[in-house]
Image (tube, rainbow, N blue to C red; front, side, top):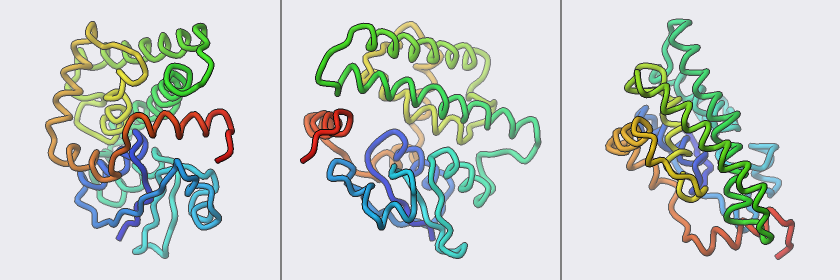
Length: 222
């Protein structure tokens, strides 16, 4: 049994989509990140970085895993799905997974901060992170022009990147000129496991999200 500690964010979706795609038995423990549940001693014992998602594998000596990319790799290896054993094919999947972890996620995250959450609008910061996000989307578009999925076959790399890129409008980045990305987004969105996985962490309305995120990014105490 996998215990999934999560919240409705792109990184949260990554874990629940993977669990649904891999048919692994799991139960969900909701983490209210707006209330600071991720900073409690109990949660920090599972994830010392105080972020979601995190999992605990009760079938493996209550082994805890944090960092969404590491979670996806662990689940893929546990299930034997969506991460090839062939060294070249495996490397391709991991390259595109790291592309999301090191590029797409951080750049879109900063775009969200300055475009949506930060009380003071700083045009140069907004432009910097939106422009870099769009550049990264263009890299995806080029890869997808000759490939149905990022690493050839559908994999954890697609799950990870899709979970972030689907929120492009929230970051203020349009993709109308990226047809291959649009095709890929729509194609993955049709997968039943993806549709279910996105719903697993629940939902949060935009007003609550913005207010809660503003508290987090500015260090305002409740």
